[in-house]
Image (cartoon, rainbow, N blue to C red; front, top):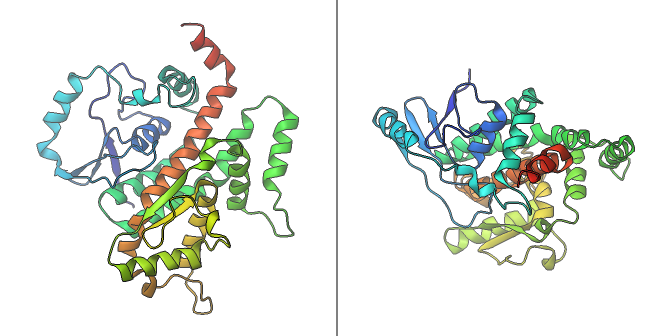
Amino acid sequence: MGMKIELIEISEPCSSIFRLDESSPELIRIFRLLSGTCKMKAYDTIVDLEINYFFPLNEIETCTTENIEGNTEAIQQENDSITKSHLEFLNGYEDGGRLQHYNTFIKVNKFKNRNFYKSFYQEICSAVYNVQVKNNTLAFVHIYRAYESISYAFPMIYSSLTDNYHNTFNNLRKWFSSGSSDNTGELKFLSNFIKDVFKNDELLDSSFDINIIGDENYKKRVFNALKEKILPLKKQEAYAENHSEPDVFSIPFSMFHTFLITLRNRFFHFSHSNNSNINLDDIDDAELFFPLVNKHAIQYITTLFHAIVWHSIIMEQDIVSAEENTT
């Protein structure tokens, strides 16, 4: 049996649909977890969450772990005095988007696809927890398992929202097409989906900047491992604009899918016959290496999750129009 991790409510108003209790569906828990607006309980400790993964990472955040017995009363007092939702950041998060749109989305969808959301929640919850307590290699394992869990589900949920059969069929055919004689697996399916969904999005101009910390020798070895073994682009300008050897390895948004999968393969599928594998001469210690990547990977997954949510809000016209008619 795995470790049981619970989300602890801290200060969401009683009237909020996002308020956590024992019966909260996984969809609500995912929002609260990824927005960093709750605490986590495992065994006898409470872990504070300080990262809202709905936004790009600017600084390394820290967490504190405290004994649960000393915090229960303070948490309850905090809850009783709060009137403003921690999800207010969703107002304006998308052009024309308001928190009320997300409230209605939750009401309509909180019990749909629940088996999928349960599996995804368990993995991403374990990932966030292990990032916070600095079990860095284990965190990456759960990040990748969470990513694999969405590989078919997100594209299928996205497609199911259209009322046009031909559009659904054409989208699925396009995403399943590998462009070669190779069979298209789940992750390739997801890759095609991401490229199509974000093709006109300004996110394609964004990047994930891995700041490499350490002495010059260490930074050069890690930078070269990333450049030569994980994401070896032929032209220097193909990397994002903040790319600066050996301090910053800057990955374009469109390339992060490839980066994540290749990193997993190069590190965990270790073979002496493959010179492209990551070894400890490259990174010294996995526990030093994976903190460079993990938070960016969770933020990337959060971006994909929100894309599905926002597409649902847009496509379910009764949701948007009903809310707009009340203003």
